[in-house]
Length: 172
Image 1 (cartoon, rainbow, N blue to C red):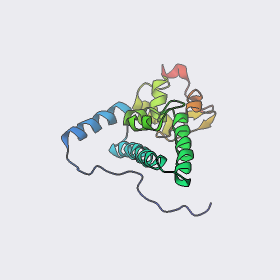
Image 2 (cartoon, rainbow, N blue to C red):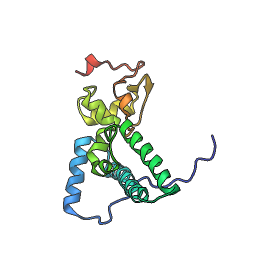
Image 3 (cartoon, rainbow, N blue to C red):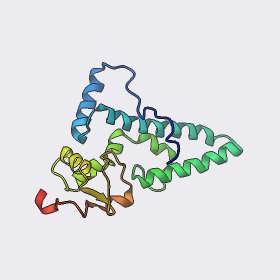
Image 4 (cartoon, rainbow, N blue to C red):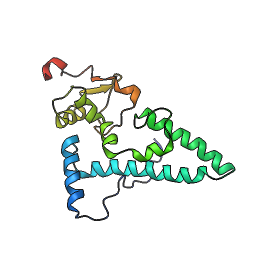
């Protein structure tokens, strides 16, 4: 198996704990996307924050001449390809467009949300239950993680798991 590495938090909690507008926005997002708690929302915020921070750093390095500028070009190209595979940006997008990605865009790419949007579940909470109980598969492989970020090529392959007793007609 190998060394599992160092466990660390995958999210950063808000700097100020009691801001009424932020808290009400968080509650609305948690309800809309069927998240279990605000920690899942903070994880998505941290992912978005990392992409934005990396983009700003790459934009600064692109102005440099030499090896640093060349490596920044290749890294930015890889980042844009990765985000286009995740359907967070369009193919052939610029670095500046990464800065306009919103938290809702990341939450829309979660398996839980896509199962609900495709009509495999009646609600986002129902979608979460179907996923955790092993009734949903991507390309024939069972996925039990509601927060799994679905790639663009995998989106059309979301279906009920073959061994699952649940069928599409039973849910509707």
